[in-house]
Length: 189
Image 1: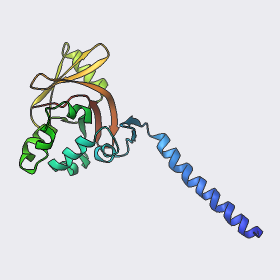
Image 2: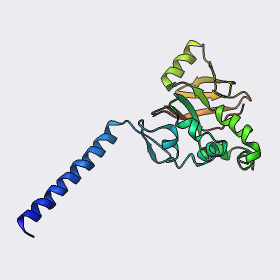
Image 3: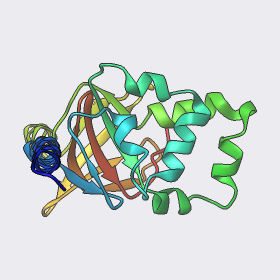
Image 4: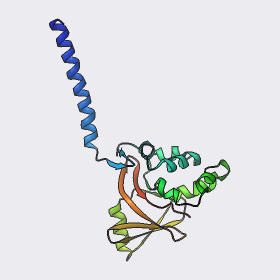
């Protein structure tokens, strides 16, 4: 290889390292949280991140079946209480399969929007509201009904209208259009 070719190859290698370095530096600037084995990037929206979590396949499928993908890609902000696949598995057998049927879209939408709060609420803000509320805080969902937040020890919980409690297992998964708090139980309006 002649000298000009060597210089050209070295130049291309340097540019390649520079560009990959910029991409790595960008991802290092973002404080990611691992959810379902995937990094959740604050620069991506709720849907762009959720589709990568191996623990939220059922939730993503339900959001698609309810036609809420575009809504959760909008500016928001939204606070999403995101049940894991294990949370959906705790429902009675056949519940999820029944809910994703086209004829049950209204009920599915009601359940999913019950997991969304209008606005961005960090775990710290919810804890402060619970403290100010003498042990509980009521917050209205996009669906229209309220959820009750409460704490025990170092854990943050949310109670639905049926009296079921969900533990926040991963808090403050920041998104470009809101925040996700991973929960271990599906909430029912």
